[in-house]
Image (cartoon, rainbow, N blue to C red; front, side):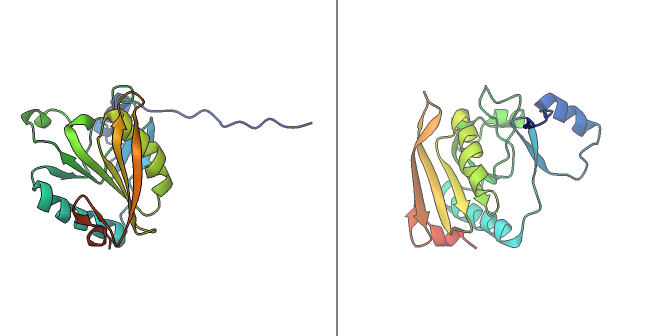
Length: 186
């Protein structure tokens, strides 16, 4: 006789539920992001991860200016994902700084670029996060893979399929969008 194994049901949270719990003080001192109803722990950053964010911020600021580059701040998910997700990419570059961003988070199609720095989450960032950003309308998405010392660049968003058509890997001896990959790797 074989036993049937199944995954127990999980409680998926909505943004409003997470906001209520936060106002009640349940998450004091904790950092997380809401992705597909799951609270994802934003673990403390090890030195290579933190260094990569700092290096990438410096290079993006040279190109786009300090006012358009934001670090570890929320962006709006696509409409279908919005109630279950509030991603906080490591870096995002705004198309322009709009006055209404004082009242709301930028939408994906109001960004030029989103960057996730990955040392332990490359697979997740290259699949689940990639798909979430594509559905949000982010036109370009980079995964800075610290272990493989490369940048995975996702471009050419197909708005009908909500997926990136072009995915290219750039090694540390190459340049992507005018940035030497070696200059953003720790």
